[in-house]
Amino acid sequence: MGQRRAQVLQAAIELLDEVGLDGLTMRLLAGRLGVRAGALYRHYPSKQALLDAMVAHLVTPPVDAAPQLGGPWDERLRGVAIGARELMLAHRDGARLMSTFRDPGSAATASYHGLIATLTAAGVPANTAAVAVDTVMAYVNGYTTEEQARATGARPRELRDRAFRDGLELIITGVEAVCRGAAPPVL
Image 1 (cartoon, rainbow, N blue to C red):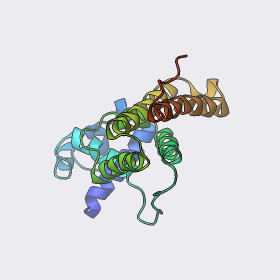
Image 2 (tube, rainbow, N blue to C red; image 1 turned 180 degrees about the horizontal axis):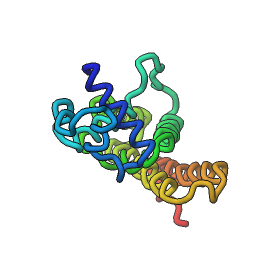
Image 3 (cartoon, one colour; image 1 turned 120 degrees about the vertical axis):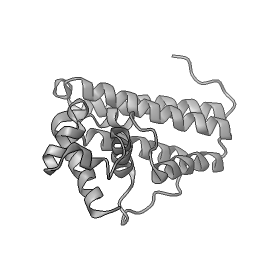
Image 4 (spheres, rainbow, N blue to C red; image 1 turned 30 degrees about the vertical axis):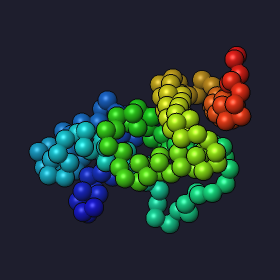
């Protein structure tokens, strides 16, 4: 990525944290960078392309981060879910931003397929593995979107974390039940 393109991307992420997704405009971003809005289109052909780049940048782990391969599938799925939620919570409207992507980037796509492969390697049927990963990621995004939309100070973080993990455990328990040939528990 070119240096100027990276500067535009970083400024967009900082602006997101300041004004939120609704306030993030190409015009405001251009003003922040001291250029005309049209100049941004040299780096990103549309606002959607910029939003996609923001998502790809945020979900791509740092080069020096150790890959989280191996281990039981449920621990890996749990770790990805918790990490994705933390990433979303680290940015104003982070969950809403994640739901805007059209192209999440090659790193996110590889991670998604790697997670499905981890489940299938552990004996989870391929169709179930894909549904499980999709369900967990939809849960993470939906839960975190609701969490960010509400006044987070109204409910202590510890309680929100516990509720999130409890919901995640229900999904994982359902996947385990399907793998054992049992019907998922009815609540």
